[in-house]
Amino acid sequence: MKRVVIFASGSGSNAENLIKFFQNSDNVSVIQVITNNPHAKVLDRAKRLKVSALSFNRVAFTQTDHVLNNLKALKPDLIILAGFLWKFPETILDAFPNKVINVHPALLPKFGGKGMYGMHVHKAVVENKEIETGITIHYVNENYDEGATIFQAKCNVLPTDTAEDVAAKIHELEIEYFPKVVEELLKD
Image 1 (cartoon, rainbow, N blue to C red):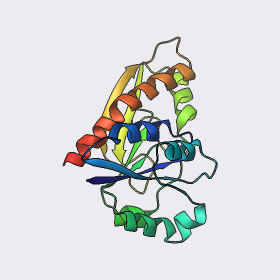
Image 2: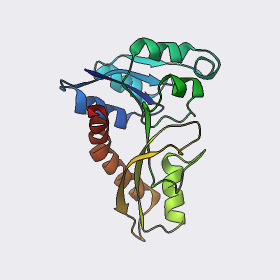
Image 3: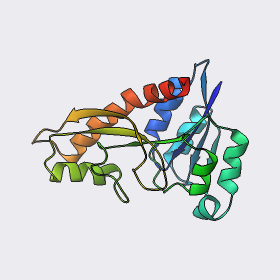
């Protein structure tokens, strides 16, 4: 059984989608949801779906080995960032090489980097009059949104689309493709 840990900072819709996708799997189990926000809705989703959940603060994440030791004890085959907004510490990346992935709401390298998440990305796509955007699932390295690309899916951006319209299209791509890409990665 492959073991998955999900990091999220917000509502957790992608985390919930992943949990539900693998809920009856004989091959993959989401063993914990971890968040840097003690008030994140993802904690409620995890509880409702009967998945262990943990919240932590910046000190536990970046200045101690608290989160790292928790991960080592869990022995995940894959660590998934699903709307997790903090930069990942090199100590964790070194302990889990090529086992940390992220989904970004744009076609990297466009609209990536520090501060480029959620509606900030969708507004930039609309303001730049892009004709297409999409999602990028990529490995996480020491820099924001610069790890090797695993998968991209595209959608059109209409001249009349608002940032909210783009967000809805991106969310559909995430819901459709993220679990399938995770499943493929875990087969290797």
